Amino acid sequence: MGVRHIVPACAAAALAAVPALAADPVTVILDTAREVCTSYENGQFDAGDAVTEIDLTGDGVPDRVVDESRFGCSSAASMYCGSGGCMLHAVVGEDSWRFQAEGWRVIDWDAQPILLIARDGGWCGGVGAQLCFEAVTWSNGDMLSVMPPPQ
Image (cartoon, rainbow, N blue to C red; front, side, top):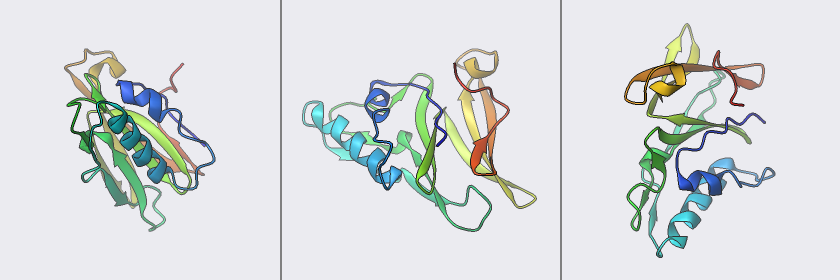
């Protein structure tokens, strides 16, 4: 299973503790986010429209993207995002990958879906207020990008 570890906010530490053997990564992500929210002054969690079904692999079968920027917690305005963005989870089957994102979109390039992730400029030699983009594509069972994996 490939996982990119980028920690933008306090909730990411709790989400990093997601059990590796969980049957459905999306359920685990949502349940963990709910627990983090309710543990902070008894907040009420709202997943909103955070889960999007979209084909990430090009096989015609819907995969899922969980965008934490869409999460809400009644007791903390910025529970799930930091100045560098929010966690974005790409889920294919039982595997998931995490990216720190300012936004995202799936584009089509000759029938090959590409997950285009808006990144804080610090990822590409700029400053935080600048945006750059990482292109991620599915190949041979893994999400690939020219971005080097984090150290």
